[in-house]
Length: 141
Image 1 (cartoon, rainbow, N blue to C red):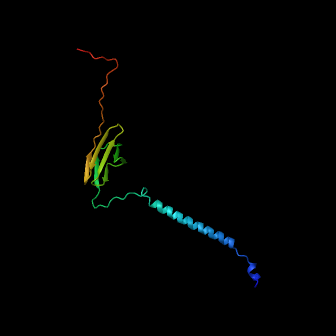
Image 2: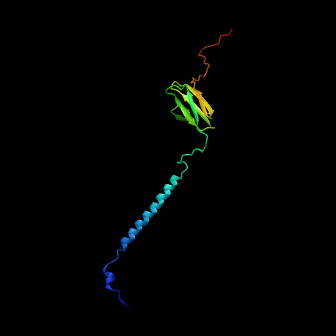
């Protein structure tokens, strides 16, 4: 049998370094794929994505509130708005509530189509309660 030449044995191959390098490259590739999958799942989460308004050719309905005192809080469908002139989706039902610091309120439910002006009259809600003092007795005639 022929004996291998010593020339091949003089320079040892650095195979251990190559194996470690390829393991790191493989780990990096797997990590990259996992990050891409996680990113795609986050992007497709329906809770995170805003709901797109339906395309319609009908313009937004304009609502104007008249007589709103300064500093009053305006709620449209339970959400605070800052302006007494605003737009809403036409043909949908909306609830408005206006209240001030004195406890006076005004409520209105409306169905908007086109432009709408509403007059706000804040009123204090009264509750009538009958109270009789202690120890009082009724006189009989």
